[in-house]
Length: 349
Image (tube, rainbow, N blue to C red):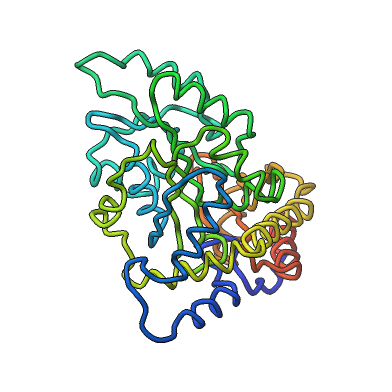
């Protein structure tokens, strides 16, 4: 069957979408006159205060340019000499950051096999035998991703168990939250949920993503005070992640955190993923699981995959299985979802 007209948006990545108009307006409002650079402005102070309120514990807040830089700064702030980082084989720091942690931090990544993309306490325990052996790099930091690189979610209890196990061996815990907003929206949808899955659970550092959730080049590193290095501010500069005109990133986080916009946009992306799933899940020959957040990873027959990618581009994921990724964004509309679903249905007909 011939495919219908392609939708007006893509379903490849939430990085494809633009910025929310309210964030653009916030940037425009911040674009007045001269203010102190490097975080000395009022907006940075306001955004920092809002993050401290959100976290519920004393944290240092460092605004950065992008997710890779945010992860590098967070890890560098937790690592000690001769430490390694435990993560899954699917971890963004292991697969999709072009070796940035290894290159800039000189650190070994202990990537453990996790078919579902989720680290477990058992993974940590299995590597803890290296502690105290002078011939082995010392497992010092555990890094997890919420939501995971396969679109899954750690429960609050799972994160707490990971933190308890890591801390029992003297390790620190980093949470890569490139899509933390989508995870919070899926698991409770309020600030209390964020606190419960991060600092209350025992997490020591969070890379808080904004760019994938409707912002424009705005990320933040949240560091539990007293655990992370007191040199973190210098580490951020050394890692080339200190914005001089920091007010523009801070202005977006003020807008996001003041009235829950960060959760509103994430909930919309999640809801559109559910809509897409329900529209195509009954197609014979399509392998697809129900999305926990705003991404799904269907397995498509190769000929249908190519036909659909030529029609409305999306990324391959596991080429060996002909698995791809479909992802909705904060600005995905019901009309766009329905148009994409119609194309998938037509391709299988």
